[in-house]
Image (cartoon, rainbow, N blue to C red; front, top):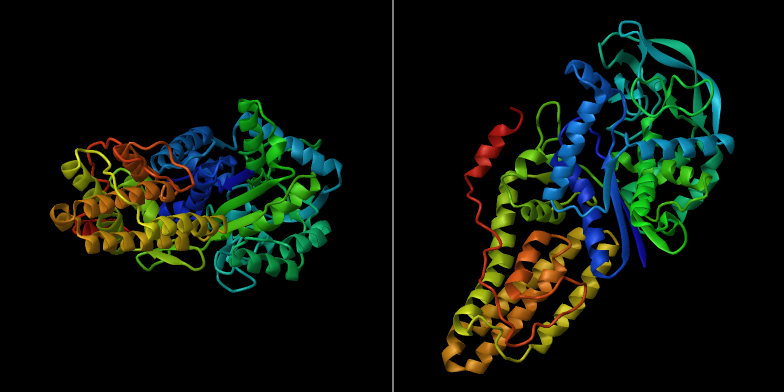
Length: 538
């Protein structure tokens, strides 16, 4: 079985925040899960390194766009590594290989008639003396009346053109722009309306928000979209007469999934086509604001060049912070480079899945984060592991005792692999981890009811059977929880002296030597809640 997973590409113009991690973390869970099942997995992503915001930041900091993208790309890589993301390749859109491949696709679309020339009116700022990139045209959305920028309204999710906005202003200097004629290249998206309608109608395993948004665009009718811009920083247009323009970032970035696949397979001396044709299941993992780029534009481009469109769209809703909309400009955000230095990465992963914005917006609360860590990870899972391993080490010579495996527990574990596996494959990560933790709470109850500290003296074989069964439980939890909290599960397998994780029921043999128990989680003091809250909006 072949599995392709594409994680959204963060924009290399500022540090990552938890909202972005909540949107892309499901991709890593999928990758780890399918590898445990023995599937051939290709999991890619990278940094989106082009566009005017980077150029403007470079001017403000008296440096180059490349120095800005280098800084944040390297920071992103470190953050993802510390959070346990298991990308097969994480690279960047200003890589020479990516540029060349995007230009090749662009030319193929142009030669096939999917890209054509058109003279248009475009917003031009006389104060800045430049045509304005879409996201630097501010105004009022014509559909919902809220403030929006010229590529998309964050309130109603409409895809926009700058000239559709009312009361336009320049997002750089604040002046009112004028309109000027210029020639650009357009992608004939309207030609592919029929294909996209059939594609969305036959979709399987999509989140509801992706289906609703896509159908709304289709009901309104797909419109051709400009694929070139007057930008100083980006991929050069490979069409004669347009050498002074750049390929628009939305077509540049979404082709990163394809170019990353090609580059990785070049490294491995394997066929990239195996992940883009035939018997492969693809997952695209991203936030709500990226839905139309993955459900309409990407499949249209792939169809036009003869490649397989997406199978599963795993699109998250938004993560709020302490009940308020996340705002990077107002510092109402939890920044990843900061939190990964001070908190267990598995605690962050667990919270963002157990409380993830799968079907609706969810909230990150520091109080709930601390309670989640102390109650579930430390109090339920960590407690079960610690009490079992410490008891075995103390009373059974640091070995797995001989005993009888509870048939009910054995059956429950077998079923847990089946039911949670299906949930993961269907993108139901919250339900999967809740089912596992429900089992953990049941296992703690089993330990308490069996009272091994009493039966140790009164019924020695019963005590051995209890601890033997509990060791099988925690050994299998090191498999079942590995996609979610990989660092803790690796520690647990080391304690139990068991081999690498796999998605199947395992049995630890009697007399297996155990290693010293190690606390998987430390208690977080509740005083950190006020400390962290004080940083917000500062």
